[in-house]
Image (cartoon, rainbow, N blue to C red; front, side, top):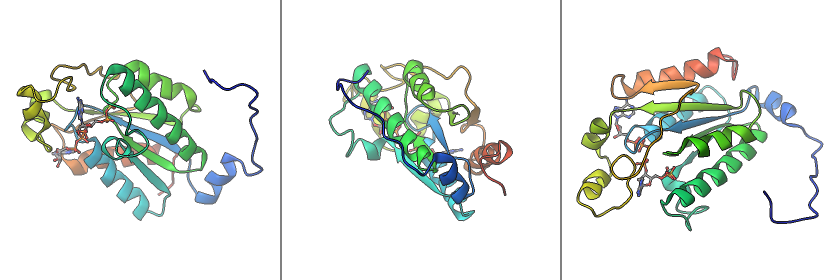
Length: 201
Ligand SMILES: Nc1ncnc2c1ncn2[C@@H]1O[C@H](COP(=O)(O)OS(=O)(=O)O)[C@@H](OP(=O)(O)O)[C@H]1O
Ligand SMILES: Nc1ncnc2c1ncn2[C@@H]1O[C@H](COP(=O)(O)OP(=O)(O)O)[C@@H](O)[C@H]1O
């Protein structure tokens, strides 16, 4: 729902299909979701690097980074997380409209919020990648020391500890970062994109 009235869509002469053709790829939003420490950032960085080195046009949006700027007025309540994901979904859609292979790394713990992002995209444009990892493993990794703080009660409402994470029901892809190496997880994502025609090798 938009608050403003009397606004009319203005089309460009250059259409999305032309932008994709110019870049030699099919644009998409590769949406990584999973617990903190599951590996969303690490895997998405490596996937982007691999795609870029193959001459593809990419961009990456990451929770920690976006919360420093665009979403620096949002916290971690369910409402703020929903707004975080809504805005990121809209930005990712714009990037995909621009013809880019866009990768996002957000916990995005609520199924409804992720599904709303899927709904604003074209068919095959939204690729949900569940980075599955046991909470115990995430906690033992604790790359930022946040689980320790959450267990000590210094962070309230931490996902997986005292805040929910709703697993995707029908993601396009699941990578198990607690069973497979980083290289294997990255390869799975790159293979999915190639095999589904987002780019040609
Ligand atoms: N309460 C709480 N719960 C979860 N995460 C927290 C919290 N407070 C701070 N952080 C840090 O913020 C990162 C998650 O931001 P996101 O924008 O991805 O979260 S969300 O999608 O809106 O749920 C998350 O980053 P990742 O560890 O990379 O997932 C944490 O570093
Ligand atoms: N198979 C794997 N895939 C991704 N990360 C892994 C894997 N195995 C171990 N790790 C480590 O787990 C941590 C994941 O942290 P990070 O990428 O910040 O997670 P997230 O973005 O989901 O919070 C990193 O320290 C990374 O080196």
